Image (tube, rainbow, N blue to C red; front, side, top):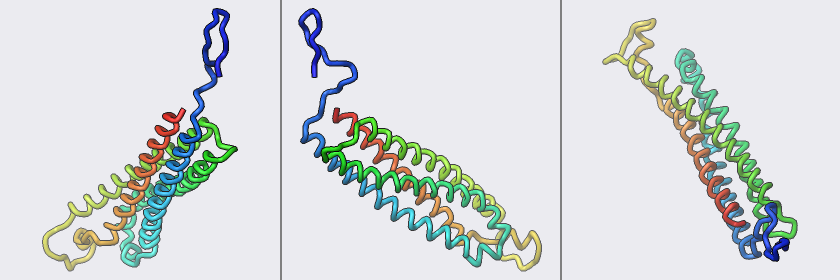
Length: 205
C-alpha cells in the first residue's frame, strides 16, 4: 500500500511493511512447526533424563547415608533443579511455537510482533536456565574437586575425619553432574532454535 504525496510521488507509510506472499507464510509455518517439534522432543527427552537422575539422587541410599557429602552437592543440585523448572517453561513455549506455526498458515494468523514476543519469552527462559545450570555446574564440579583433593592413598580403616577423607567419588555423584549437563544442553538447544526462528520471522517481512 502506498500513499500519494503532494509532489506526485508515492511512498509507503512508516507503520506498514511489505506483505509476504502466501508461499512465504507456508514456508514459515512449516519451518516453525518442524523446528518447534524437534526442539520440544529433544528437550523432553533430556528433561526425562534429568528427572530420573534428580529423583535417584533424592532417594539414593548412598547419598542418604553420607549426609556430609550430600551437603556438598546440595547447592549444585538445587541450582540444577531451578534450571529444570525453566526447562519446563521452555517446553511449554516450544508447544506454543508449534501452535503458532499452525496458525500462521491459516486465515487468522498472528502478527509478526506477537510471534516474536513468544520466541523472545522462550529465549529469556532459556538464558535464565543456562545461567542457573552454569552456576550449578561450577558448584558441583567444585564440590567434587574438593572431595578428590582430599583423597589419600590406600584405604583408611580408622574413624572420624580421617575415614571421611577416603570416600571415593561415586557413580551417583557423577550422575549429579550428568543431570546438570543435560539441563545445560537442553537450554542451549532451545536458545539456538529460538534465535533461528527469530531470524526467519524478521526475514519474512
